[in-house]
Length: 383
Ligand code: GDP
Image (cartoon, rainbow, N blue to C red; front, side, top):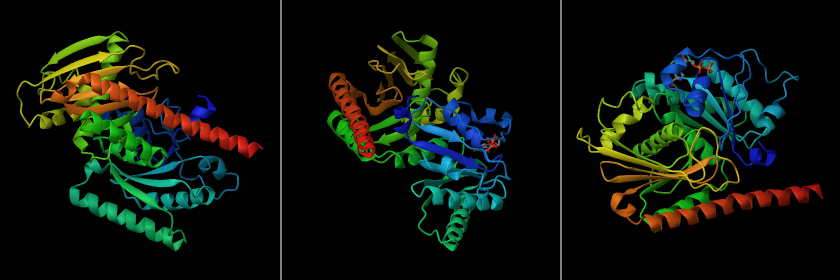
């Protein structure tokens, strides 16, 4: 990737003790592995940098226990200097005292080198904990960590805590919040999404990083997990269809896809989203219908980013049995816009297409301006 491209993407680093779940998180979020497959992952013991072609520059660092930040040969500046967010993963199903000690020394070392890092703690594998125990664990971890940092004179360091699991969408939602803190253009993007929704009768709009299914921005109406999950499942469906049918324009009807068992095998990768479709249909088990149509004039959503410089016009529409329409449009080589709206509203597709087109143009300008600003700063610095 070009340096300029690298630099404009949020950089994220994942750390934590061995077996805390780092490789699993990486595989599930960025490589579409199913949570159960992670049971067979070999534990990695070396620093492992993964090159991911996504909007997010993501690295997993696996430190063997004996590695010491205070060892003078250990180049903390190189490691923490450029990072936007440091995500520390703690296995909540295990005794976490050692993890907390490790978290503390990591924060102390990283903060000294780069006080701009945001520290994010994933209290992970909470699928195994009862509701009460989850809350207690979070309180305990949060309290211990902040107390120890205060004792070390670092009371100003901000840590955020998330309860996560790879068995549901919590891991994606946590990443979405982490990433959003790293995007300086976020208020502008939210504003543009608000304008788009208001002018088009769209109920909810998400800007997704296609590869990871992390949303990097949404309009300011509240996010309910269900709409997020439906949209993220849509990306899976579209990617599957694009990879089966390639770039040709396709239209596919799938009767009974929202039903119980029938299509379990065909759509097995999205089992956990399955119930939610039913919920959104009022819990009914009737014959819901989903119509999927996908048109891709210049590129398709794929696991590979589309050719840069191309005219990104891929779009897809899914009409659900409950009168909701999901409308997806590719924005650039990493990002896609997904809107949720009523079928009646979607009758004015021309208007919506036009507004989305304006939104895309504005997006280009936002990122273009940032690039221009950076170039200007670099030139000034060189003078
Ligand atoms: P790493 O050494 O930090 O990379 O940890 P791994 O990714 O190898 O994970 C260690 C084990 O934790 C594996 O058996 C995973 O299946 C399991 N694991 C990871 N994430 C979760 C989770 O969210 N919930 C549960 N129950 N197990 C998980």
